Image 1 (spheres, rainbow, N blue to C red):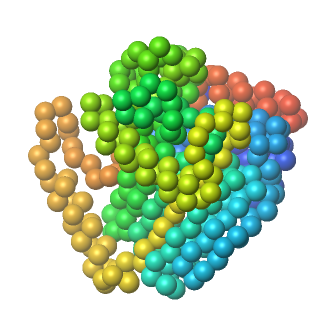
Image 2 (tube, rainbow, N blue to C red):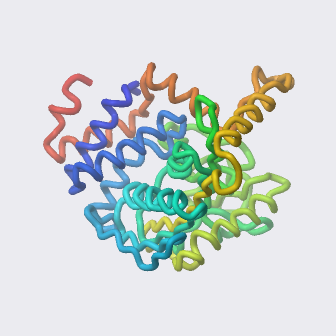
Image 3 (cartoon, one colour):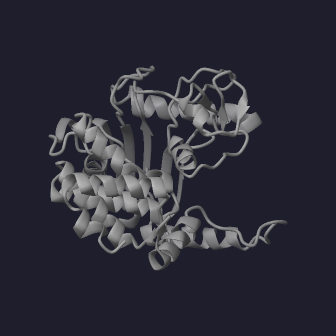
Length: 351
């Protein structure tokens, strides 16, 4: 169970991705986003995913060097076919385009389909926030395998359907919300399986529709519950809207085809604050609002109130200094790939 510095993990991920056929530029983008997820405390979207991505490249489900095709283009909107490229590469490029359009027109939106896993959805709206704009993104897996039941149902009909909104401010860390509309992101269940851990009640059902704390039950015919527990109709409704924005609006459609490729359809929008009010005043007021929230006396069992996104920022600072924990099963998979690509001596000789 090694603890590895972030730069080394990025180098390992990038070298392995290049070995699978990715360009150096693609590998840098994927490794940066993946290890960035680890740094934020979201191990489900971190280095644990690299062997999966390489497996998808081998099976033709991810296409290194894929065409980035703009199908529709207006001063404020863009529609992109990613042709099964790395989702990190496709979505980062499209978010940059959307930010540029918002700078010129005040607001801009885009959809993208036929791209692989985009990882941590927050990465892209945070790009907008760092440019002084409000960013939003939703994601859905289209017709690929589904894992989440509708509220009151026992068979999956939805994906985990994440949504993120990020705000510009003068805070040290970006204020944002990034959440699955299910009780838990599927990747967190994968981490629990890899670490031999149980999960809290209220996250999943087994194949018989009974509550379960065994993360393996999802892979054995179980399902994930919508966000909200007894008030799960709220998470369910939000999930439906994310599915429409990211699945139907993008043209992916809806449904359940377990044999299909993982296909992240995404909707993104950027709002130039300056089109609505003075941008610096807005950023200052958001900062004051965060401080106002944090001034609340902590409730019993809590030591501090955090603004949305603050915990991720603190984890990043901590893990940059201390290193990132990697479970043995993931480390072993990375070592096996290094052997396969003939780079084991370069990457693992000291660890």
